[in-house]
Every structure is written in C-alpha cells, then in structure tokens.
Length: 273
Image (cartoon, rainbow, N blue to C red; front, side):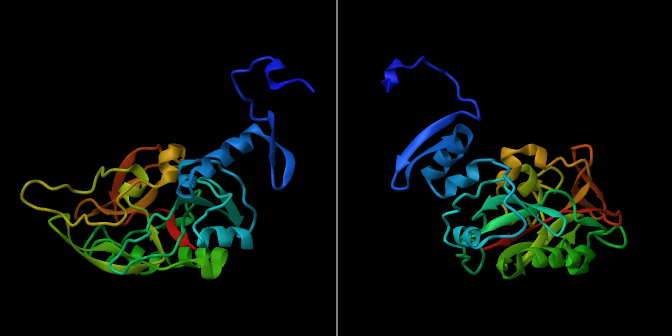
C-alpha cells in the first residue's frame, strides 16, 4: 500500500469525495460533505446552530432526535434541517434561543421551528388599528389558533411553553406598554427575521417606546440563509409600526408594513423540546 506522501496533491474537496475514518466503530468511509458537517458539530453542541445543512429529517421526530434536543447535544441536527408533517415543511430555525430567558428562568433545551412558508392568511385586526399592541390584536387572541393546532398535531407534547415580553399598549402610534406572557406559538418579530428594526418606532429623544424583548437576536436560519426570509409571499410580523400598521415581510423581499385589516400570511414560530 502506498504511503500517504506518495499520492498526488489535491487542493479542493468535492462533496462526493470519500475519506476514511477509524475508531471504536471500526474503519469506515464517509463522504467529504458529511464529514464537513460532522467536524463542525464536534466543535460544540451549540455550534450546530452555526451550520446550515437543510436535510430532510423525515415525517416525524424520532426518539433519537427527541433525545438529542432534550439533552442539548443536538446530535445530527443542524439549522435548515426539516420535517415534513401534515403537508407542512417544519424547519429548524435556531437552537436554545430562549434558554435562560423570561421572568421565570427557562431551562429546557429546545429548537425554534418555523414553517418554510405561511400556514394560511389572516388579519391582524378587523379594522386598521393597533390598539392594545400585539397582545390586543385579533391575530394574537384567535388568529393563531389554527397555527397552534398545526404545531400541536406535528409535535405533540414536545411543543413547549415559555415566557416572553409582549407589547399590550400603544400611544400615539408607538408601543407604550408590555408585560410577561406565556407563549407557545407566535408571530416572528423584525429582530428575529432581519436582525434589526426597520419600521417599529425608535427612541426619538423624548419618548422611549416599549421595545423590550427576549427575542433580541436574528434567528440563525435567517442569518445563515437569508433566502428563508424571502418566500415570495407577504407575511405578518408582530411589531407595531403606527396607530394603524403592523410590520410585515413583503412578497417582493422588502421589509415593509401594512394596514392591520389586510389579510396576509401567517408564518409563526414555535419551540419544541
């Protein structure tokens, strides 16, 4: 058998190239593509959220996958991986995003799950008002019931409840009050999608809007693959923009806002563990 140094040199891997691994499980081959993902995952459990893979994980969460989520190893789970359940593509958007957050410490390891596209269309309110903020909206009160049912049907008892701070008052078109609420399924925010605010009112030097939130960083899915933001459909975000408008993602890919009574896509997130 030739020595390693006898082989001609290469400077690149192709995804189908094969490497040899040896260990307690014996000597086996592995494609370069699979090895690249595995090497990244071996850095640390949470480094799994820094790799976009996009693998079909099947039609249900297996016992091994459930254990990997609940013990926080996230073994063989990466951002962009997805299950197809009930005709919906459920995508892993982040890992342990809400860990140690809330007025009650949230200590359960979890995945943030987002459907690849809107589940259906709905109004934020029957009229063009943002009175009561996100919590006061028809969307929050009843408009997410169908989405909650779909999440529950797909993930059962794995669907978790956590504590989050939400806007429940608006004054002069700006978020003016909020409180802690239990949450299972909710609309995403501008920060979760874009990593920044676009239309939610900012501090103007006189008024400090209620923008407190544990959802204070961009979801890994949207950061690693921004195409997952732009689905050629218009869908709602939870942020109050004015006395009549909420934030939305526009079908042409733009950050935008819209009158509350318009019917737009409902693309919420939930967490499982």
